[in-house]
Amino acid sequence: MSATTVFGRIGGNGMNEYGDQQLNVARLWSGGLATAVVAGLIILAGVLVARGVLRIPVLAPEEAGYFGDAGTGVYAAMAATAALLATGLLHLLMVGAPRPLAFFGWIVGLATIVATVSPLTQQAALESQVATALINLVAGVAILTLLSSTGAGASCALPSGPPNFPPTTT
Image 1 (tube, rainbow, N blue to C red):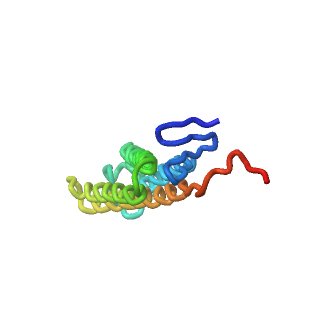
Image 2: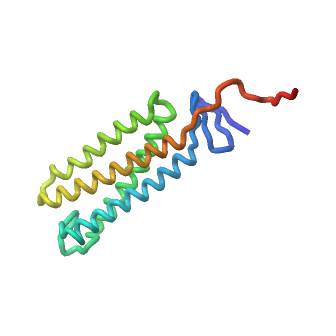
Image 3: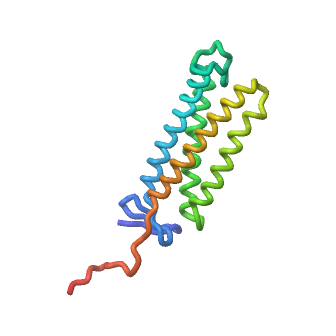
């Protein structure tokens, strides 16, 4: 059984049809959830390397330990949330934009630039600013590349020609 929406037919197989493309929504969002986990782990690993290996006090005073304080968890959660928001953006673009992956690349690329440059405008030691900027850059690039490939993999062209329904017998 299938229902019709303003965007196209929605069937029970988790696929939506949009124009000449078919979007596997389950694959898109499962990739988005995996990307959110990766983004959060990038933040944790980046803070661990900066604080534990390089001895750069990122997000908290040096006395706070290798993982910093509660701000590190909030930072990782924000990266995961950004990945989920980017997945929602990608879904919307794939439904309605003429070249969804191109627009997605530009939007997330520019957001990554903002996230990379913004620590450099804060009052902190230069080494902390640079470390935070690099962590943000790696997380942004990961979100961009993982979700771009997820979007490409979740979309496929519909077969051309008239549907073979009802089946013809010869």
